Every structure is written in C-alpha cells, then in structure tokens.
Image 1 (cartoon, helix red, strand yellow):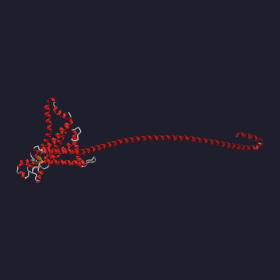
Image 2 (cartoon, rainbow over the protein chains, first blue to last red; image 1 turned 90 degrees about the horizontal axis):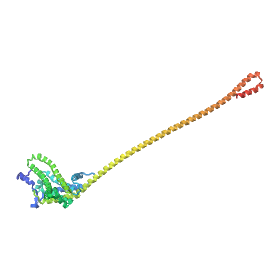
Image 3 (tube, one colour; image 1 turned 45 degrees about the vertical axis):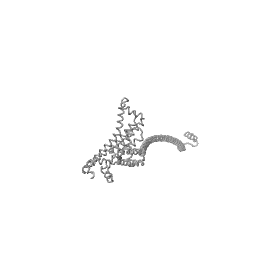
Image 4 (cartoon, chains in turn blue, yellow; image 1 turned 90 degrees about the vertical axis):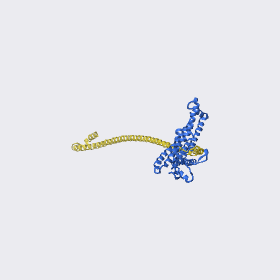
Amino acid sequence: MATEAHAAEGATGYIVHHLTPLSVGEGFWTLHLDTLFFSAVLGGLFIWFFKMAAERATSDVPGLVQNFAEMMIEFVDSQVKDSFHGKSELIAPLALTIFCWVFLFNFMDLFPVDLLPMIGSMMGIEYLRVVPSTDLNATFAMSISVFFLIIFYSIKVKGPWGFAKELMFQPFGPWLLPFNLLLKLVEELAKPISLALRLFGNLYAGELIFILIALLPWAIQPALSFPWAIFHILIITLQAFIFMVLTIVYLSMAHEDH
Amino acid sequence: MSINATLIGQMITFALLVWFTMKFVWPPLYQSLEERKKRIADGLAAAEKGQEEMELAEKRAINVLKEAKEQSSDIVNLAQKRANEIVEESKDAAKKEGERLLVAAQAQIDQELQQVKESLRKEVSSLALNAAEQILSAEIDQAKHQEILNKVSNQIG
C-alpha cells in the first residue's frame, strides 16, 4: 500500500521512511514527538479506563468496566503474589501499569502500517512511527526506571552496606572480590538492557515484517498479514506479560536478603 | 534509533502513570475486591452456620418427637391398665351383687316355702279334721274326742 510518492524511492526508502520517527531538536536533545505523543495518549487511555473503574468500584455486583478492571487487577495481583512475598505498595500498581502500557504500545502494531502515517501526512506530518515500543527510548525509559527501583529497594531493604556486601562477596566469597563485583555489575546491568532490548527487538521485527508485507502486491497481502496479525496478538500480549513478570521478579529479588 | 532526550520524557510519563495508578487506581479497586471477597466469605459462613443450625434443629425435632412418642405410649399403657382395672372392679362388683341377689332370693324362697308349709299344714289339718269328723260323726261323740283331736292338731304344728 505504498503511496505514490514513496514508491518512487523504492522499497528501502519506504521501509526507512516508516521507521523514521517524527523528531525535533539536535543530538541528544532530540525529541521523538510521535513516541511521546502516542505513549502519552495510550497512558491516558489506560488511566482513563482504570480511573473510571476505580471511581465506580463497589463490592456489590460489578459492572462490565469494573469486571474487566478487576480481572486485570486479580491477574496482576496473582502474578505479584506468586513471586513477591513481602508487602509493597508499589510493585503491584507498577506491574499493572507496565502490563497495560506495554500492551497498548504493542497494540498499535496491529493498526494497518500505513493508516496512521497516511492520516499524518494528510495533516502535514511527514514522518510518523506509531508503535512506541519500536522506539528504544520508550523501552529503555521503562527498564531504566525499573533498574532505579531495583537499586533503590536493594539499598532500602539490605542497607547500603548490605547491598555493597552482596555486590562484593557473592557468589564466590571475599577472596574473589573484584571478580564478584564484575559479575554482579554485569548481572545488574543486564537486567534493564535485556528488558528493553527484548521488547524493542520483538516489536521492531514485528513491525518490519508488517512493512515488508505491505510492500508485496496487494492481492497477496491479506494472506500474509492476516495470519501474522493473529500471531502478533499472541506476541504483543506475551511481551507485555514478560516485561511485567520480569519486573516483579527483579524487584522481589531486590527485596530478598541473602 | 538513537537514545536521546525522548528517554527522559518517557521516564517522566512512566513515573506519572505509575504514581497515578498507585495512588488512585489500585487501592480502590483492590479494596472493592477485598470487600467483595469478605462479603462472599461472610455469606458462605452464614450459610454454613444456617445449615448447621438447621441440622441441629432437625435433630432436636427428632428428639422431641421421640419423647412425645414415648410419652404417648406411656399414657396409652397407663390407660389400658386403668381400663383393665376398671373392668376387673366392675366384674367383682357385679359378682358380689349377683351373690347378694341370689342370697336375697334364697331367703325369699325360704320364707315363701315356710308360708306355704304353714298354710298347707293348716289345710291338711282341717282336711283331716273334716274327714275324721265325717268318719267319726257317725260313730264317736264329738265332745268325747275333742280333746284327743286338739292334741293331734298341736302335734302336727
């Protein structure tokens, strides 16, 4: 469904155009407006829905909205209770936010690849990348926030010295201190990087395949994009779930005192 | 694809979302869930209690019924006994009355027999006197034998 203008640039041009974010600014101070806009809108959608459910919350017979919200709450709560045994005001709401937000990010992938960019170009916006989780900034923003929480809770629960001891003396005892430190630092740093890259990679690849399918003759497209979209429903849910569960696991590990 | 200031913006959005969820979304929903859970548990407990109470009441009713049955059978037995006694008593009374009547009848019969004997004796004596009178009138002087006849008459009585 490549539009005439981009067809002229060839397949590569089409793909590159699709994966170029709408940005302003230079160097580090570049802002991806599309990522910021869509993630804010999706976050607003999430907040709007759950706030509505929370305002209507009763212990009487629940309505449709409350039912759905409670289903999500129960689902997240059971995941949290499975791996986290302490008491925390933050972890369950954090997990719910991550799951819903990431799911909504990923869900943008199921819109036809050209639909929103086409509407954008009609409004004079040249570049538009609609799936926030194909932007490393969005995925790293979450995983680095989680990383900060891991550090925060590690220090809060074990004390600064306890956390430092864990970094230095585990797993091989005090005689291999530098080695322990190196191993632990890699382990801790691997957490946010793997979280962010896993989500980004999956969604980026998924989006790329949708774009590639869109390059094929129109008669073949449905036969490929339909099964891929159905498969993608599984992927987007799974990726949101993995992000949430790993967050819970990492934070519960931070709470555990060895 | 490069990391840039978008990251900071996203982190701020994320922090706001988490804060909002933590403050305004999770607690009321979770509380309503807990409340419902408690209400359901209470309801179930009440139902169970009701069931138990019903079973208890049933047991009690069975006991009461059993007692009532026992009592009624006691009463029936007592009544039966009393009835038998009454029958026996009345039998005795009837027997005694019969005996009394029999004795009275016997006495009357004896009395009547006595009277009949008396009258019969008088009749026989007058008949004999009459006959003797007729036989003797021809041969014996009445005045002469009057004394003998009186003697005999006295002997019969």
